[in-house]
Length: 239
Image 1: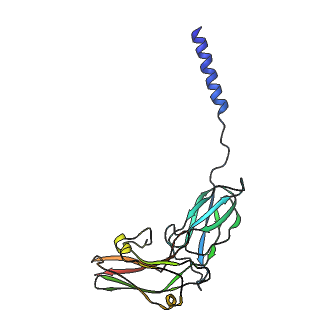
Image 2: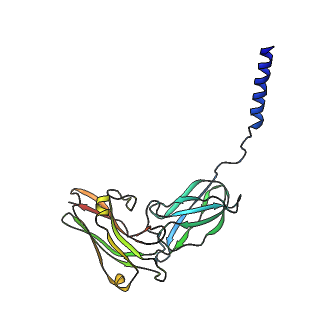
Image 3: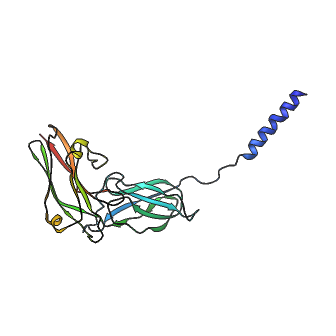
């Protein structure tokens, strides 16, 4: 009798578990989204000079909620972005986190497949131009000038910094700390005509001989993200 009762209890437990289990019939991620973030001030329509995760594309899926939890796609160093693991749906899309003036969000459908693309135009806070990188012995010498496409309401300029790496991936997240942290120029001032006409110089001493480096300069303003506007990347061979 005890065996019969035990068997019945086990059977009821299995049925109870089975009744609480639901099959997930929702489709998995089946859509991709990609594009470019372009520098609105560039006459050739080039992408924004940036670094890995130098900005993000914020996605808010409105298909299920008016106040969805956001997800982000990080920037690639060439100013592009891509995510191939998204759910199809209707999204609010906003470029955020970069060294550019705020951008209004757009709404769009991201459908099944990987052919969903969108380009965004942004206005950078700052521009670095006339950038050169030369050697004085084993001292790296950078020269450049600064420009502010929009001056009204521009946050204070914090600093300019050199960035040096042994690969072409170079920026605030990929640099040799001793070359960068010890040689930045603090500014902490509002934009002025003097800044517009000044030729900035940054010297990075004691570069290691016999190595090729990839170098660039960056400038940032005192906004909530404190991301960098960058120069182009230049290779430098130290003899």
